[in-house]
Image (cartoon, rainbow, N blue to C red):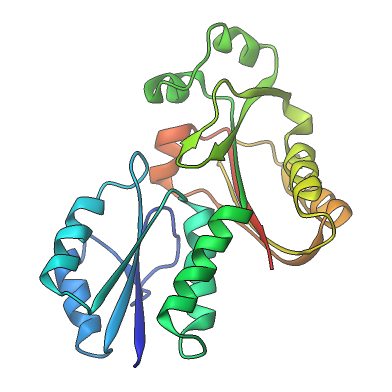
Length: 237
């Protein structure tokens, strides 16, 4: 039974990809119908709130197309959703749908998503700014959050700006202990230019890196967490 794939955009930056739903160009049901005409079943990847806004619609469509739409709702967003999407693409045609879903759940369980931002206004709008957080950021610190389950852990860890890339790499290195790792990162447009080189060096030093992808942070995510930010997800194979 042939399986198709559809992900909401949710921070994915690939343009004109038939497997990524663009709500500006078509409805979610229209995208599902397009793929259901080509595949026996379609795996639908959707981010849960607060970073995903379309889960209820996806659940309604699953009821409308029973047995043909497989819905996987994930707490991951941005580079985390990108990692799930690319891993699912790899497995299409090679694994049974249930095995694909099991691998996505393993990635969520074993992977680590971190978010660092120095934009107090953006964090305040989300309710993530701890007391005194604005002053701490004025002193040159970023707020570093870890995704735990379906929520970001509060309060965040204050990290000096120059140590943010190393913190991501070191935390991942401790978590994965020599296992082959894939890392996906989004860099905000106001992040220090030195972070690119620091990330490259840190990831190579601390991880048995199989793949690393660093891309600009999509605008919708920057509006949520601020442009002076870094968002990353890594998982072991």
